[in-house]
Image (cartoon, chains in turn brown, purple):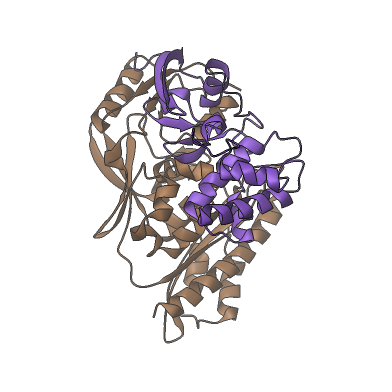
Length: 291
Length: 165
């Protein structure tokens, strides 16, 4: 299987990448950025995507790596493999470590990037659930300037994001957090390894009372989403199994579930509740240990 | 035009530099098989799931059906043909290949090159894996003959040999 014909240009700098995007637009061509290509190339082979131009940005080392300052900044071109092996991310963000161990497979993790996971807008991508629960922000650059937007606003629908054709995601930033427990749980489609449902929980507990709870779900709806109803039910609740079960029961409150050949809507909703319970329990156990 | 439909690929494969002009849409696996006649790398599912096309790019295992030849330009590729060092003692096999032979880790052999390349990476990352870690670490490779039992045995045997080496 070949992708449909396209023109290829390799950017050697962020400036050049923006130039190549602008040139394609000037020619009236649909251009796509190519990073790891682990989602885009399979879609192109199936003709689900037929861009006329690919701008290869994989070599832009200025967009790779993890740094800690006021929070954590992860370069958009940091691969899953690099992220999993980075002490700044792996040690401090247990839910991220959970997700990176079960995301796709080792070969795909060696190429796929965190920026791609976000920019692609796949409703069943693993990492957006973790990033949503960690209140991630997306850094975006264009010729006209740079901007930062919450991931929750950036994700819009099935393969739809708030990324204009002349823009490039340059980094994901995570705000500095208090010591909390976090965990990611998924139930995967065995061939694609994509989650039929995946849930990330972040919990802080003080004196056996939950003081902060964040819950995000992927694979269930048209876009990964925050389960705000469950979060409200958890805050100020006793750190007990019953509280977690009550909150998990409303994890997909008001959500219209995806339904396809892999799983029906009701099955996805059931998975989301079970996984929310498990993720909350593990996050809570980790929060207690980190006290 | 923001790019070109034909690209010059300069890539080192198994230690030998190659330069070729190919259509931009050429996948690395086809470049290896059709241009360089290195047919040890197989095309299985062609959809990034089965792992039969696994090669090492700059020393890290990737699926060559989901990498453009153009993306590999400037990088080093190792295929199953180049896995064993040139001065391999005696049988010319890499320890993972030898373990597949000793443990009967294959039946039809179609998935084998990809399995060997994936296990090389697995053991490079984790020299002393548990059986569960081997099984999870091979979730990017599919075998339809063996039920995986002897592939896992080969990985564990190769791990032991490599640790002693």
